[in-house]
Length: 228
Image 1 (cartoon, rainbow, N blue to C red):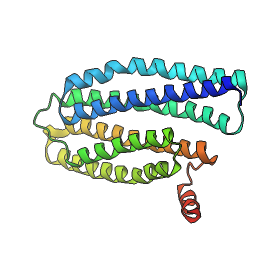
Image 2: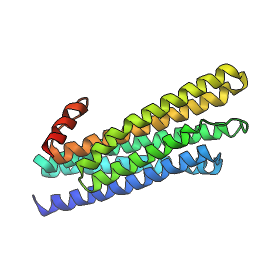
Image 3: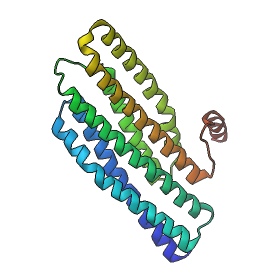
Image 4: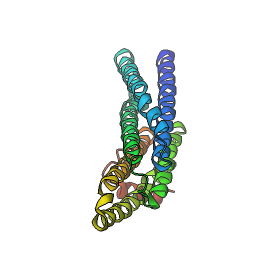
């Protein structure tokens, strides 16, 4: 590998880590705005989105430049491909954070509405997934990536419980239909953020081990555990 390519890859990695940090902060502020009914935090999240979009374009352009100038192969090529995919997932996470912030604004108009308690647990688990996905990328750690993928089932289960409770709430009290729909949307956005953390973790496994495990988690887990 040339020194120029190595410098380019190092700079690319640092740019993505910084983007990860910005997006993680957006998610945390968005869920706080939802749970704490803080419209000021929701406004901060929405105002941050333009910067995320600009950074996403810049990172993608740097990836394409490295591909064109140095034609990387093997692990270097996998790293560039992974950065492109993770960069896209982070931008989608930021959009979802904005969607959550918008739902928080809407719920602020319904002070009597109380979200299901499981929503806080779901938020905590999803935040941990995002943070651990970042750690797995920074540390090139497929074991941490596997744990993120396994945790997604917990978020899915909590989302189902929340949806069931909201459905019951709407059925029993027509005045709760509008805020419950906003809460349903927020829960779905949080669940989608967890899905994207899972996707990033799949990409980390591809980066480190060169194996695409999308749609075949069970087979990979069996093989991975059997080799330990």
